[in-house]
Length: 169
Image 1 (cartoon, rainbow, N blue to C red):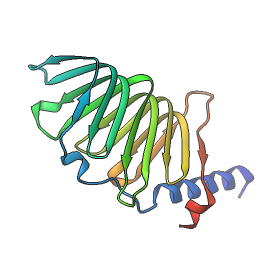
Image 2: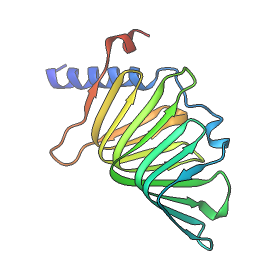
Image 3: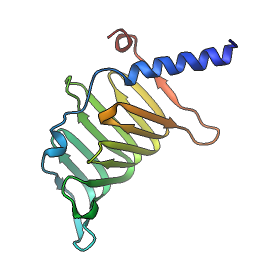
């Protein structure tokens, strides 16, 4: 096996350890009401879209999203099927895990789909979980299934930092 493929295999194995740790998001979060505070709000009832701007804070259970602007769309008017889009220079997302730890994310744009707990971070993305960190241009994370994909821009790199104590758990 050549040096490059051994290095790639080792990176994949270490990354798999990081995301396969038995820490899931609190299941009750998406069943909680959504509370939003902002400087301004615009509502389009026909399209089931609400836009908030100016120091926006959105909370649902232990989920905490902060951004310059947040757009919440209730897909097909169906409760529990919201798409939350957060915009700003480094919008943030935080959620407590069932083991007491936290998922912490930041990016220029964050899209969170409540129905399937799908988190997308677009533009200068960073995800922290269990003392480990992933940075890239785009990160997609299926929280309920613990599946993650990190992609860089052309010529860019994906950077992963794994802490030894996280690997030993």
